[in-house]
Image 1 (cartoon, one colour):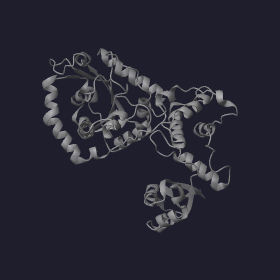
Image 2 (cartoon, helix red, strand yellow):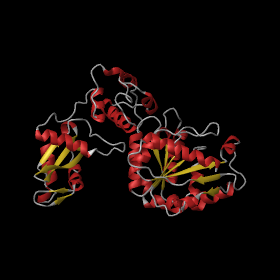
Image 3 (cartoon, one colour):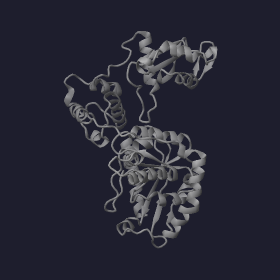
Image 4 (tube, one colour):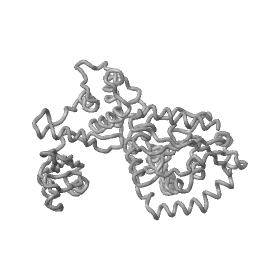
Length: 421
């Protein structure tokens, strides 16, 4: 909230809404500029290239605002995008610092970020010395996991490349990072994050199908045994559910394991590349195959409320969408191994789950699925009651300052421990 010298309270989101309704605005942030112990609203704008006109935009937006809300200060952000968190929210303190320095004439309006060294300096606050191509990102520049995510996002935006997450995590020096940029350009996969599956008509249809068909089928085929549900007693959502990954139908065993308050509002992360192929089938497929791929996409999204979690790049938008789901009261299911098991053993958790858990800042529920790998090997879905088991561990919530890699390791440990329960 911004308190003006006249003592009026202004809410930035009201002003941002008025600005975003203008055609020349790509994004905006409204901050309070300090004025004699109070503050005045200042619009920080990302313009749509030559189509944007800051003065005209402010004037048009002010027409829809009350007199005390009107913006008399503005600042055009000089970079292609705002500095953002891993969930793609603008980092307001950093934006405010740049604007205040520019308005007071102290220093440059924004740090130079045309170069890779400039981007690293902006994100870490530590300059890369000339000739620092051999500087180690971790030991010399002290890049944290969150810094890496922010840097990857900034590089993709600036250079319009699609970086491979696994290769990016293996980079250790500035020189290696430059080489990755040179070789890393590819045609970005367009991931779509639909909100219509969470609408009440689709949700009602999905639950009707589940309880009329899928739920009875689950118990007729396997009658899974659920253990540890008492750990969820009194726990309120939204929650992040993490589980080992054995088959592509693991969600069929996760759903009956969860109480109805979580089960009925569950969104599941699915491989983004696979979803993209289903949504836009390859031209090499015949007409029938393309139709079946699109049908699979529609059924997966509507009946299981899945959303894309890319394995290579673009996962930042997925994190942002998961945050939006949690804000709207939806629980999120993720399989952190990123692939189904080949030998029955758990694979190491991908580092992104720690970042996601840290950014969502909600309780995490670990689950381990037993008895599915032997059925997978036999291509069998019918088994005796209790052969398939789902064990639910105690929920955990992590401290704000906890390291994302540490969170990843802790979640993997908690899921592995359930294997022997």
